[in-house]
Image (cartoon, rainbow, N blue to C red; front, side, top):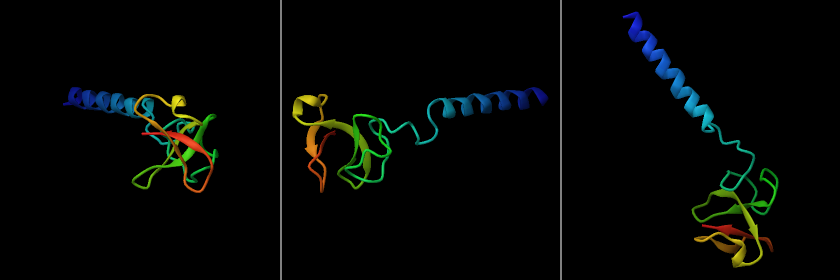
Length: 90
């Protein structure tokens, strides 16, 4: 029985390490895709990213753009509500 407990403890430790190592929290420095609170603000977002209101009501830090060519494939350079700013949006 003690061996089984040791195996369970080892599994638990490995799983906790995976959760922590993969960013178990939502504070990842404000990079692209991070949750933010104020669309149009750079507060809480990493350099060259901007808090953007996305369809569905969520806010995320997204790459700042001025023209479509600034965005990766599959994303569009769209305006952010109530601002003159744009970001690359899915």
